[in-house]
Length: 471
Image (cartoon, rainbow, N blue to C red; front, side, top):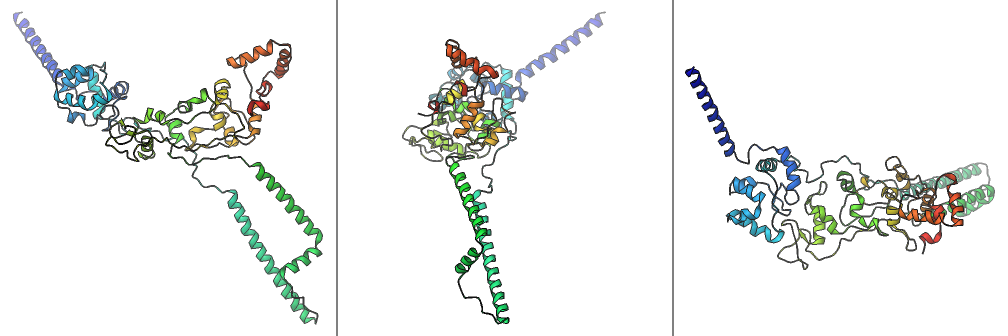
C-alpha cells in the first residue's frame, strides 16, 4: 500500500515539474513567435491601419516594415508602448525617447490600444509576414470592365476622305474613257472619209453632253441639291451635341478603379449634388482623405498621385504638409508647392441660359447618377454617355427610363419629364404639391385628370413649363 502511494507521489511530482517547465517556457516565449497572422490582420486593420503601414512608408506614424530588427528595447517595453505610450515614455527608454522626439511634435501622441499581449503577438506575426499583395494597400481586383476611350474608331472625317478618293478615282476613269472614245471615233471617221471631231476642251465637251442629256443632268442636279440639304440640316442639328466627349485631364483619374474596384460612391467625391445646382469637382482635400495613406496606384504607380501632393503641398516621403511658400527645406517630387488648384477640364456643360439643379433631381427626384451619366464604373476618364449606352442599364439600375433623344439636349430633358413618374408621398416637396392640388377646386380637377391613367409625371406637375429651366 505504501509503495503504491509513493509511486503516485512520484507521478504527481513529475507532472507538476512538467507543468512548471511549460509555464516558464510559455512565459519565456517571445511575442514575436507563435502569433496568428490571420487574426493579426483583422486586429491591425481595426487598431493600427489608420496611422501605420506594413511597408516602410510613413503614414501618420512610421512604417512597420523591419520593426523586429530595429526594436532594441525588449518585448515588455514594446507591449507597454502599444498599450500606454506615455507610460512607456516615462521609463526613460532611449529608443522610445527618439520616437517621441521625431513624431509626437508633428502628429501628437499615439493613442493607447486596448489589445492584450497575445493580440499584440498576432499583430506582429501579421506585420512581419504580410500577404504578398502588401495587405491590401491597393485594390487587388481588376475584373471591372473599362471603356477604353483611347481605342481609335472610324470617324465621319475618315469616311469623307474615302468618298473623296473614290470620287477623284472615278472622275479620272471617266475622263480617260471619254478620251479613248473620242480617239476611236476619230479613227472611224478618218477611215470613212468623214470630218474629225472638233478639237475642244473637256469643259466644252461636258457642256455639250449635258445639253444633249438634259433630263438626266436635271435629275442628278436635284439629287445633289437634296443631298446637300439633308447633310446641312444634319450638321446644324449636331451643333452643341458632344456625345462621348471625354477631354484629357491634368491628372489621370480613373473612375473605374475608384467606383468599381474600390466601391466609392459617386456622391462621396461629388457631395454637393445633394444640395447644389452643381455636382461639384472634389477638392484635393477630399482626395487626401484616402491618398494620404494610398501613395501608389494600381495602374500608374506614384506618378499621378504625386500631382495631387504637388497641388496641396504634401511631402509623401515624410507624411507632412509643407508651409504656404513651399520652401521649408523640402521640394515636392513633381514641383514645389505654389498653392495652385488642380485645373480640371469640364465635361458636362449646359448653355448659360439653361437652369439645372442636381439637388432637385438627386435629393427630391431620387435619380441615380447613372440616369444621366451612364455606368461611371466602366469609365477611365469622365465622358458624356450616349443615350443608347444609358438605355442598356435599365435592368442594372432601377429608375432609368428608355429615352431616344441625344444626351444633354432639350429633347432629352423633355422626353424624360414626359415619361418620369412621381410618387407624391416620396418627399416633402411632392407632399406639399399634393396638398396644394387637394386644397383648391381647380387643383382637385387637375389631380383627378392627372391620375386617370394611375400615374403622375413630371410634365403634369409643370416640368414642361419654359420658366422651369430657362431664365
